[in-house]
Length: 139
Image (cartoon, rainbow, N blue to C red):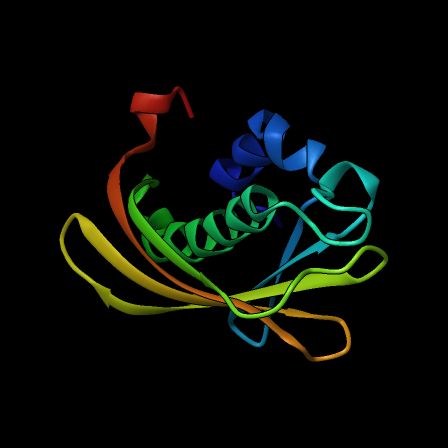
């Protein structure tokens, strides 16, 4: 069963839907996927850094959400850093994973990685997320 907060997140995340984001939990880890197709490209063959950054933010944000959802909280990004290692090539599927570094009372620290479906490292990132009651978002 999908948590009601996650259902609300999915229903209201129109930007994620536009990017074709798909996330799930596997062995207690958050995994996020995004195919690289024409709408993501900045060159004839490589994705725009903004698309990859949005994917990283979503991946780390879902991980942070998983840490606070049992308290009926949601998260918002306070800060994010991303380092691009390799281009995200058209026709590949990106796979994002993230793990919690530290969860405080209101702040959650996350690190993430993005690989393509052949195992190439595309980007690494870190993010800081604010936790607050879901009712403030209407969820």
